[in-house]
Image (cartoon, rainbow over all chains, first blue to last red):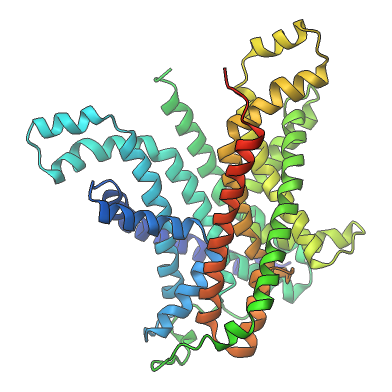
Length: 213
Length: 237
């Protein structure tokens, strides 16, 4: 395992980070819409988003990537591999984040929403200024937990042919015939990405739990 | 060193006038159902190992021997912060080095068990910590020995307390089995890949098995619900 191979792995890690960031950002935007629809009080919207969430939580991420990857081509969209997997991760993340944030919104005491109504705040202001800031605070640990899950999940993009860290590892391993060394290093690189986030998440969780006791 | 190609250069020719054809899927249905059985086998074997690792890990996690404690913590953190795909590759290449030459399916079961075990340790530990100290003291006061105190006063209520999150994790483990196709273990995704390779009906094949996975995870949740009603139906207070 020489320097060029290591640089190649770093290049793969760059794509892992980029894909996680795109999935998290895109999933965050769509996920917010999902969470708001899920708590909108309109039965049709609530049921539709509940079904959306349970489909993504009840099927493997790998299948979601396959279906999106082949499905987009099927409806005639000519997308590069990274665009197709970005769409896949965005949808995946939107369902999970939508569910986490729904939990956060529901954890905000009813009185907050009623008080905002009594002050004649409109829906937008009520959500933006009163409910969501508190909901995000409560759901921060779970959100970070999901970000870690998403980073690990991007490794599956390698199976549909996207060259990120896991696939870079595969290619290097096939070239120098030292699979244990290569996958050990690849694992260490994922660990270096995820562990600080995990520690931050559990620290956050303890901090949030402290004052309520 | 060949550079990875993720850009427009990797675009292939796509069919625009595509008509869906489920013929190959229907023809392969018996194989797909056998694949479902393979997935369930992987999942249930993995869960059994995970449960054992979880319980043993929780005991070792609080052992007075420091290296034991530390190695459990390191194991949990390592598994929880690396992708399962990398873990299964690692196990796949590591087992032959320690003299274990196993077929892909047992290898996948070991990898799934290790992965699920790390999560089970974390979850069960949360349950054990929720057991009040007075309970344990009361158990000893009633003359139970250490083993029985652990079994009946700590472990069983702890498992009941964490049952929803533990089984939720197990359903996730069932979905994770699809990654075992990367080492060609016998399960649903591998079977689907074979059918896809012969028919090129990618969307139809993967769309269908996505529905099968959805049914499997739903069935699993129902089954866990039934077990919970049978096994944990003694009164709480």
